[in-house]
Amino acid sequence: MTRQPFLIHRSWLSLGALLGALLAVAASAGEPVSQLQVRIVNGTTDLLAGSYVELRIYEIGGGLRKLPLTHGEGWPRETTRTLPITLNEPLDPRRVERFSLYYRAVSPAAPPWQVAAADVDLAAGHAPAHLLLATTLSGQLHRQGELASEARDASTMSCSTDADCDDGRACNGRERCAPRAPGADERGCVRGKPVACPVNQICTEGRGCVGAEVFAPKSAQAPAGAPAPVAGAGAVPPTDPSSNE
Figure 1 (cartoon, helix red, strand yellow):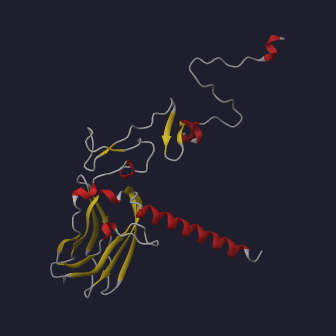
Figure 2 (figure 1 turned 90 degrees about the vertical axis):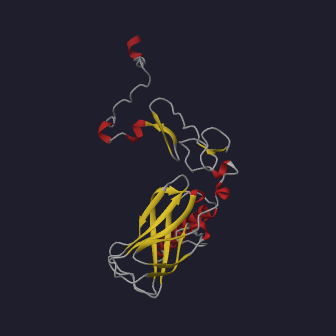
Figure 3 (figure 1 turned 90 degrees about the horizontal axis):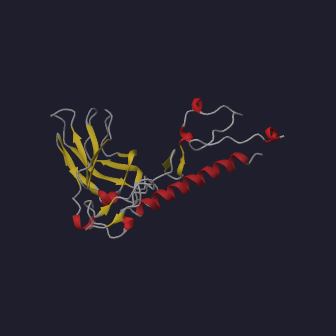
């Protein structure tokens, strides 16, 4: 009995290690990720309280994600900030053209902000790290501006296999790599055909087509012990055998 807490603790550690490994594998394979970790090493000047810092991720086709990194606090000089970020929509690293740190000083009189190093880890801090665009930023920003990575060569972003176009979702269909096909996007990917479920069913990720009653509120479901409704329009109810006697 005395070892049970230790065993439970060790199982949670094993689960955490497994999840970390899965995140690292997904990042290294270039698959969409929902979690990031931003690391920023301050230089020889403080980031004054009230200044604003934002991670900007530019995607193919004009998409832009703006992710705030500060909330009014200051950052002392020569310190490291490790900031976890959970994305509302998964990010496909293969669609990222460039990224940057946007800076706006709290006042025009603020000294330039020095960034010794800054990078974005697609593995969200789990080993091995996988940096976005394999890039670490460094430089100095005065008053307002961006410290940005170099833009990727468009030729390196074209798909070569269907796997390059896979967005990891099943319900919207299987994407294809067909650069010359009508409707192909900037990477040469063609959208898949959404899954068509039977009547009164909807497609769910990981479960496929399921009945709409699965998502119905409890108040709309039949009470316990009530007979289940008969499917199909005009269905004939079962006959009571005692009526033939």
